[in-house]
Image 1 (cartoon, rainbow, N blue to C red):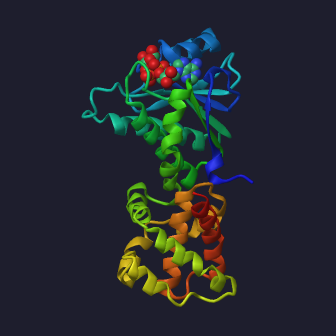
Image 2: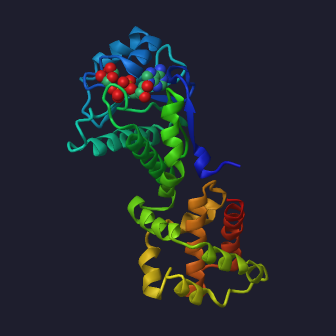
Image 3: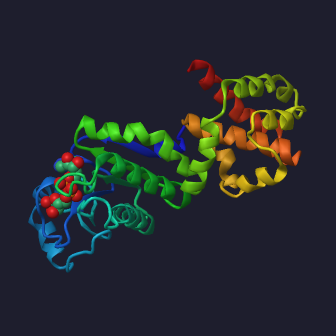
Length: 294
Ligand code: AR6
């Protein structure tokens, strides 16, 4: 079954060969070609692409323009102008996020069924690869959460580049649940949970399976310093895309499952009525599997 995290695929390959509906080019402001992936795309597309690019009048850093794909197997090329890295104090991160954001907006606007990105700015433009991977994933996950229904491919040119995405994939996919900063704050609480908390939480599963609301929830949360009052609980409620949570059942991400399981447990404990035992079990059981396996 398709899950939210399957809607984004990370691979190693040559982006000019991909049959996705669109591919993104890491271009420069002239849009008139260059080296790296830009050179490869221009060569594989043929002269028609350069001729169309000449009519566009260039493009600002952080923005994108779309053209046809000529001899390429894809149907559209989205030319994104990434920032040159000058040490990080010249708005480089915001500009790189803006590249991914405007490419995703074009994909939404034109109803593109799939879009492939290279690692923009991480070649000639020297943007640090770990931070670039985080920015790319965060921005793409935000659109998968909010408005993009197709598939995103991140096409790395080497195994080493792919590794940067693999390392931060789970953490960045938390953006699927809500605003990045707020969810990261909640994640810090999850990271601080002791094994004893999980043992006690999992011991409630039999009660939940019988349809009973666990009676010792509040005591347990207080005991582990996780949540001390309804106000404390409420301060976290607004971070999450709560209405979409039932759809996140298939998220292949231990952090997402932990976040949802603890969130629903709190909802059950502190409001007494909003989450049902069945809702909570859907998340608590897979978390137990993962915690027991690790
Ligand atoms: N398929 C996928 N990725 C590729 C390919 C390919 N065929 N070829 C290279 N890469 P870069 P930038 C990777 O330098 O840093 C150009 O001259 C490459 O390994 O192409 O945004 C433009 O005209 C790296 O991970 O783009 C601009 O002047 C990534 O693509 C300038 O370079 C981006 O590297 C843009 O620099």
